Length: 215
Image 1 (cartoon, helix red, strand yellow):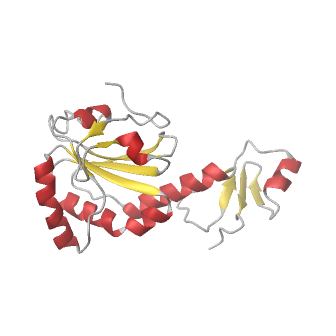
Image 2: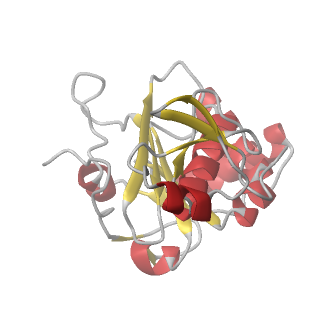
């Protein structure tokens, strides 16, 4: 099975979930998507992560992002786990959790790493854009919970840089200055794209603040 890489089309699939049977690309529609996997139900770190995802419902919604989780446990197990998540994390789980007991989706997304576990999935997360392309892949160890603030930050960066000829520098947060792509050198093009001006720290390092993006 080839490794899934950035820029690849996210594999489509049809699978049962806590929201019924769904076909992934159809379910995603024109939205961005976050697909993230868990080794098993009723595990402590994963319980906190699914709770946090539920708590961030409005943050995902305002970015046009749909969240969907996956575990190789059964649909019955998922249905029994969801009340635990809701009670311990003080939230309501309104996104689907895929039941992947047959490992079909896990194989498509290269989530079974034999050196970690021959049966359970690793804890990977994929950000997928409306064109169904994979834009971010992060794989976490079982002992470390995901940082959803970072996931939202990367989504903000991807959506911003898709719309402008810029990239985001180290530790960037929404509203902070961005860098102009080095490929843009024509003075007239620069003036048209960045009438607000920019600071040229070096010819290849030019900082600007986008209108409407200032903190």
